[in-house]
Length: 224
Ligand code: SAH
Image (cartoon, rainbow, N blue to C red; front, side, top):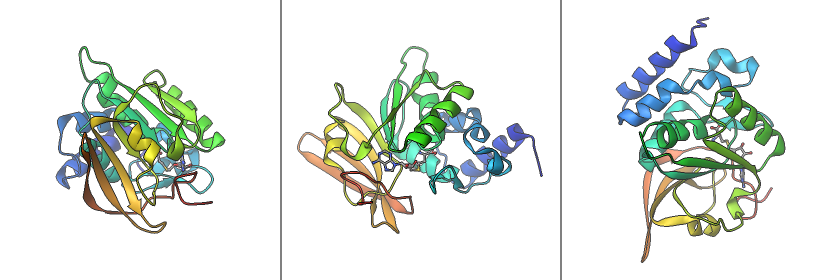
């Protein structure tokens, strides 16, 4: 077993670039900075840099690195962006987003707000973000992200990291005109990773390919 996580992280970034999942410098830098091992439960830590989903708590998972890379690239994250994530899980994907939107620009400092429906996972994510030093750039909220109360401000990027039957209306309302949402849409078993662009006159939805996520719960998710 290799224990040097920094070497393993470097190898994973090279692999994701070679395989075409990472296409931009900002995403490559985020992956080489965020320590995935600090977001994985201790018993799975040795697998932190395998390109696979890993268990978190209560049958939920932390997405595979290549899926996080695809979503970050499709969102076209930039320094200064205001990001809403639904499904904090371990907090890893939120930290990747924070690295890009809040740590990459000289002046523009964006922020990530992440919603998690499960109390224990909210606590798990909060602790992981604190240990890895991302707690000031990511706010974690416990609640139903499929049916959020209206926010006082809108986000220009939204990512949903659980499978939804349709685009939740409340989330679309929280997205700025011109903003992008990436969300897996389909059945409980298989989805299309959908890239939604909100325009003044409606939405454009494109597919970034098939995917499999754990299901979104809550009012606009799959009933539980
Ligand atoms: N982005 C995470 C992985 C998410 S797994 C990471 O980087 O680790 C999907 C998560 O969505 C699970 O933790 C699950 O509890 C949460 N979830 C499911 N339905 C939700 C909802 N309606 N609102 C907020 N979180 C939800």
